[in-house]
Amino acid sequence: MKLVIAPDQDTACAHVADMLYTCCAQNPAAVLGLATGRTMERVYGHLVRRMHDRPVNLAGCTTFNLDEYCGPVARTAQSYRAYMQHHLFRHLDILPTQTHLPPGDTDDVTAACARYETAIRAAGGIDLQLLGIGHTGHIGFNEPLSSFASRTRRVRLAPATRTQNAEMFGDCPDDVPQHALTVGVGTILETRRAVLLATGPGKAAIIARVTEGAISPMTSASALHFHPDCTFVLDEDAAMDL
Ligand code: GLP
Image 1 (cartoon, rainbow, N blue to C red):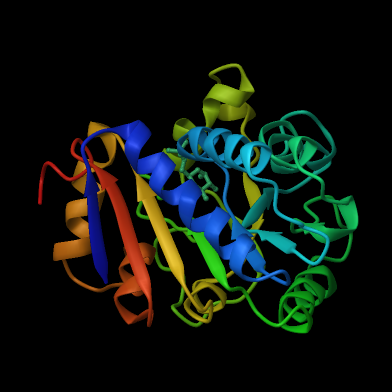
Image 2: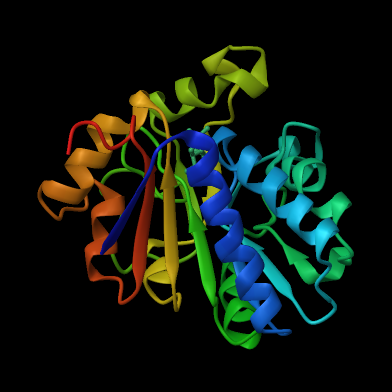
């Protein structure tokens, strides 16, 4: 696991945006694994500016997001599909058929999750996986006790995660869906390259636990010690407990 410590949040986000840009610029058939959350908003802002300044042909590019809320919310403005559309996809020359999110509104969860895994494999696997981190140590929505071999599936969100993500739901944790679909830890470990971005003092404790603590399913992100090519990009605030 490599660590990059940037002087501030904006530099950290720009660094990660550069990694995504370079991946697309060097490989016309790039397969990106994308993430949501407030941390990523600035990354996508930088990426959109880079793509506008020096356009890259994205016609052969494919994206797969990590997760989506379950239920009717997956069709609303609070969904991760809407988040991705707002912060990234609508600014890029990319077709809806090139972008994938787990279908949170499906009636047949098992079949839909298996199809998502198949689609990732059919695309050739993920070249660069972007990851944020939750206060529970989750990557995607792999909450504590997720198996390191887990695959795309339905999960129950931890209370701390529902509190962390309440902003999009009128600051009311009870209104955050109880379940989500997420790719698994095993799915993430198979990506060719992974970059985890954490910024701000609120992430310092979990970053110290993940990088220096026990490798344990209690902290899903600690599985990244087993990833063959993983970089943590932090700002100084997120790195302050190291
Ligand atoms: C959600 C996403 C995670 C992401 C996390 C970080 O829980 N499902 O994939 O890592 O948000 O959120 P933030 O960037 O808002 O701290």
